[in-house]
Amino acid sequence: MNYKNLLFILNPNAGKGEIRSKAVRILQLFSSAGYDVLVSPTSRAGEIPEIIQRRANGVDLVVCCGGDGTLNETVTGLMKLDPRPPLGYLPAGTVNDFASSLGISKDLEGAAQAVLSGSPVDVDIGRFGEQYFTYVAAFGAFTEVSYQTPQQSKNVFGRTAYVLEGLKRLTSLKSYQASIEYDSGTCQGDYLFGMISNSSSVGGLKLLDDAQISMNDGMFEVILIQKPDSLTEMQQVINAVLLHDYSSPLITGFRTSNLTVSCENETPWTLDGEFGGAPEKVEIENLHLALRVIL
Image (tube, rainbow, N blue to C red; front, side, top):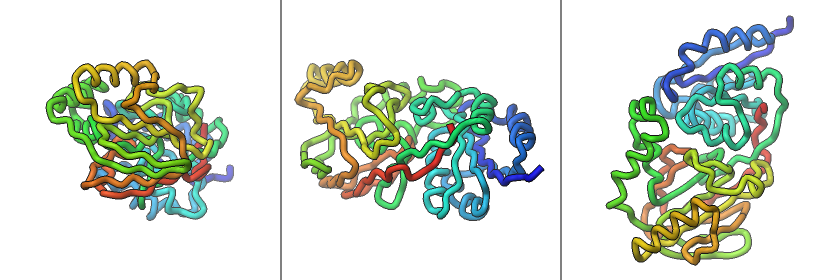
């Protein structure tokens, strides 16, 4: 048998730690398919790009197992390689928005089987300054919840942990003065929330109509929510988002391949649920068909 090289990156703490009990079976599946498997468990945040830099050159396939943060780090590492090996993803996190958008099985063994029998599909990747994201870059209300919720709470409560953490922040919501330049225009305002998305699922919620979303059309979907002046307006905005009705004058939505966001002050961002820094100005670009994923 001609063995191929596979780099298997796994976050043993993702989700409820399910990968710990299934890792041996998954490794057997890869080995039986003719792969010589290099296993790299992660031990700290930010480590995966370093692992890829050291170990991924010359491999035929990279597979990562973990949540959206693990996936983001893996993609960040792969984007620095030339050529880039294709990516297989085994979703083991709390929410797994990327997997939901691409229809990847949440069953780890099923996802591993799909990596071995599936077909490669080229998908868009977002560039955020010198960083990357797979499905969302966002600022404003509740965006810090995803990266400030303790992992232990995520493991015990799942998505409910995000809700509980978000409720603590209702009294401290702030807005951000921002000016946005995009493909076909400009806009500015005092925004409570801004989202640049390449996904039909964000934070486990279906915020956008699946029929309008593609992860390989070279375009982002952008939603900007102006700061409401009253609790009544706040409730109207919440209802509009949940009902996919973006006709409210407080909500601006458009599609674009590139945009520049300039804020009056440093503004914290989340990239795929992880802290993405707090720039005053950032250029965001859709890298069309930049990464091959096995589906």
